[in-house]
Image (tube, rainbow, N blue to C red; front, side):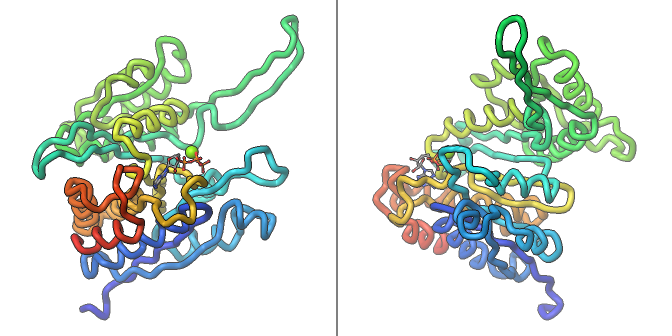
Length: 346
Ligand code: ATP
Ligand code: MG
């Protein structure tokens, strides 16, 4: 039966900066899982600022083709973006989300419990819609009575709200508390946020679900108050989700710990929340834990719960022990030392 065991094809896109230091670490952590996941096969792919400077394209067609046609999932590192606008350059991560229709950005924020088995102080998930809202980038500037006038269009559709809502209900259902909070500002934006709110609320009544989400408690919160009161699973339109997910990440200290996935109906891509960290690149001290957690989240999304649990537990142990940590967590260890500590616990 081992001969028949499926392979799991994983695209690796380290891109720029510390992405090249932490994505290889995540790869090794996945390899250490052995038979808890299908045999992994890794495909190295190019994207990012350096790829742009060499080829004139931040996201080569080949990368998209291989991801779409050959890979089951991918891990993305980080991109360094130019400080000024450069003609022809646009973010490859934004393009990838579009090309692969990765409409959800899922970001769990978890602080480590002081003792094994205790409740962590922060344990929540932000589910951010990733394709519309103000990010449709329809802006214009005109001259009016008051001088220059600038406006931006915000688009909320029923389809996008419904599918992000459904993904959020799934995530809420899988958690002990089963609470889903809809984040909006429909007291001010009654048409756009009103549509988002109503559509997400109606998800449990969709045909074919047969009461699947009956155990999920639906709550609502205005986005401004959500930044100081945080909840179990929060679902939000693109802009609010962007802000909330960074605010939530700040609750647990280092960016080097927070993972995410970009998910659609047929593809999932893990991505640490941090950027390319130009201040520490090449020093061998980048924290690999956000990337390893992103790999866990990706595997969990694909249904490989056991493998995902082993990665998460190993990371939790290393943090809780507090002996082998990178400088962002006040430790003195290197990327490789932290990785090795994780591998040992896996
Ligand atoms: P970018 O423009 O690519 O986002 P940035 O300058 O905003 O780059 P970030 O990567 O967002 O940098 O990181 C912000 C700070 O957090 C930096 O000081 C960086 O060194 C630190 N940091 C981010 N990720 C990590 C990590 N994995 N390990 C250690 N420190 C990190
Ligand atoms: Mg940054």
